[in-house]
Length: 291
Image 1 (cartoon, one colour):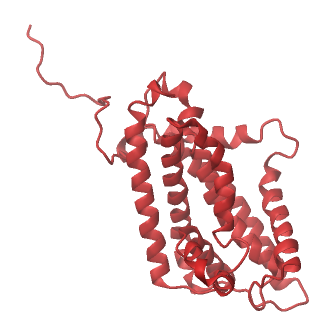
Image 2 (cartoon, helix red, strand yellow):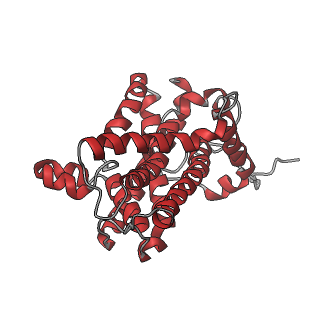
């Protein structure tokens, strides 16, 4: 009997993929695997630790205290009239931590998962996606910490503070998406480059620290523009600076807000994500030969 010339296959595994191919249908089919990776990322990070998930609370609180003592009390950097310095710093750190952890944790995707990638097929983009989703849970916990201290400073202290949310809060979910896309896109770019140039992984941690100081985490953008106007463009056009400034405006009412800023972050985040996805898709076809 002659073999049937064409068959309807459920899935076809091929190295020839589209340049930009997120393939939502296949990712949805592997959603259980995505959830397993998310669970793995959450459990294994603090497994066999004494404090466990309490580190989600400790890290932003200790960092905020240090920033308040050094940058506000010692260096005298203002945070805005009627805004507690600790709350100002906690807002910046909370928003930065989500982006930073997404970037760092996805920057070594191929190396960390080479054993799995070499044995079984699944959409490779699931691994960095799982990092973004699992860090979203950590961000939620740290956001609750921020809300708790916000309530304390506004309602349970004798001093009257001017901090208050604004109507721009309706765009807060989109702001979280932009942070995730920025971290995911840059992480996929670095992961693809690290697959070939291994020494780049040593620069990731150092580079993220430098980027934090250039993202207005511990100072207002207006203060930097006043003190160093000739270099202010480096900070002003950093998309994470805009994200952090928008986060503070939405939650504390400090700073400025414009549709242009929101649109700028949206466009840059999408471009970086798509560029990272292109490089990631190209690298995954041959990474097993160089990893």
